[in-house]
Amino acid sequence: MNTNLPIFDIPSTIRYYLSLDKPVTQSFGMDKYDELLHPDNFAVLSNEGSVKSGAPIRTDHYAIILCIRGTCQKTIGAFTFDVGPKSLHIVSPKHITSFDNASDDLLLYMVMFKKEFITDSFIKQSALDPLIDLNPSCAPVYTLSDVHFQKTKQLFERIDREYREGSPFFLQIVRLQVVELLYEVNRAFEKCQESRPNHQLTRQYSTFINFRDMVEEHFLDKRTVQEYADMLHISAKHLSEIVKQETGKNALQVIHSRLYLEAKLLLTTSSLSVKEISDQLNFDTSSHFSRFFKKFADENPSDFKKLSVA
Image 1 (cartoon, rainbow, N blue to C red):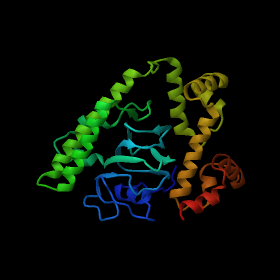
Image 2: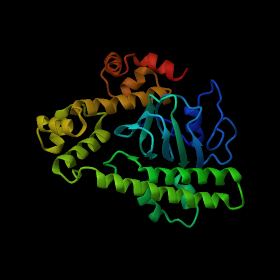
Image 3: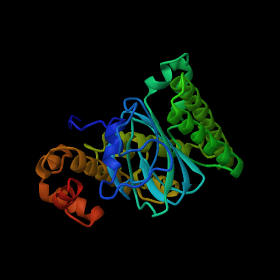
């Protein structure tokens, strides 16, 4: 699928989510309203001054995000989940990401980095990959214990302090601290796995994961539950039952949700017209696309596009 969509680097991501209406004081991390010192492959910052909802984008970097207080809803790839106090989540560059419904008191600590930032040291990529590419079948969000939260928060603050002071070798030390943070992420992942029901290895769960991966690959040309059921060699009814048990949604809702996410991405980050987006998404007419989009957004795609670029 060639949509010529932009891939946001770290400065572009920060600017995209930054509200310019009223600059606010930054209590943590770099000042997003000022020139970024090392914007290409690393940033440490908070969400202070950001917009309350962010339309879908694709990025070229990782982000490790610790929620200090407040709430929001986050979508990363196929997963939509609630972010709350003492939770930690990670965004990978291969996924579409967006967020909604940020509370007024939301405070997030964030570290953004490209893989090259870490591998530009003695850390080998073969050692790094397992740390940043976690189990794709699980939502990348973890609730920390009080002790683990305080330890992780202190590590974010050490990274911030080291970066702000800019002492000799500070970038080398920050790299090591980010690797330490990645180990903490993996520790959180392991603890969450231990506390979750052990259903990952069941045949039903495996079928659901296969379905979800197939939707990601084929959502543009396969729109019916029957098509996916045929690929999985089961009945459409059985597939619907599995998806309902695993997600609370029916299989068609999962297919349509992925298509809607792509539509939002195209409307907010491409220069394509609504008609061109309709064609890109393989709708038979732009009217059909508009009806489909309005079911999700309560507004037609042309109005949504105008608001997103306003």
